[in-house]
Length: 205
Image (cartoon, rainbow, N blue to C red; front, side, top):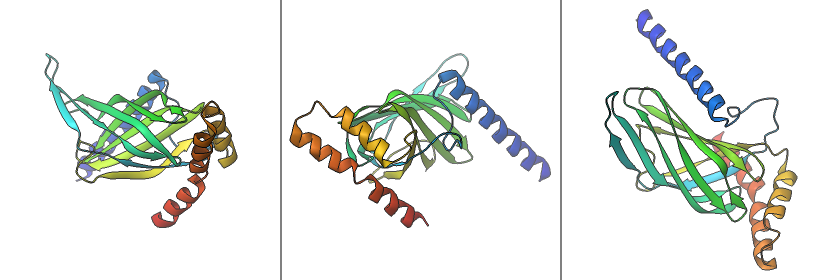
């Protein structure tokens, strides 16, 4: 029993170390929750239809990837388009991928994914830059494939914003060229983020 626990702990430690190394190589920034960076959260709610698996075979082993779409809201703003693809070599506990996410305030830039597997649970970490600052969030599932009938992923995305005022200022700048009515509608939507965050936190207690 002790040997099994030790091996499991060793595998998990290796996975974390490899994951951090991948993040450093990809340049996607620090993992969520770094204490030395401000973090005003953005509430997200994504509808995730079933993903499409794909298997590629090579001399060094097969790789499996999963692709799908995201729809819903981020920080109170509707998601116009969202896609993702992630996977890794069969038998490995870490992998990666890329995603796209676009709202009327702009697209997530340098958008990349880190996938980690712990037992039967897969955690898919999304990293990028949104409205000029860092954005990261995660979706965790039983099994390997995100999505399915009626699946909704909700949570709080970590950011580099220091406050709601900073987030709102970034949105206002991003939508400045849009028609007045559209601009005011989007600013009002972004202003719902504090209420959405508070409701999520209350529900999660």
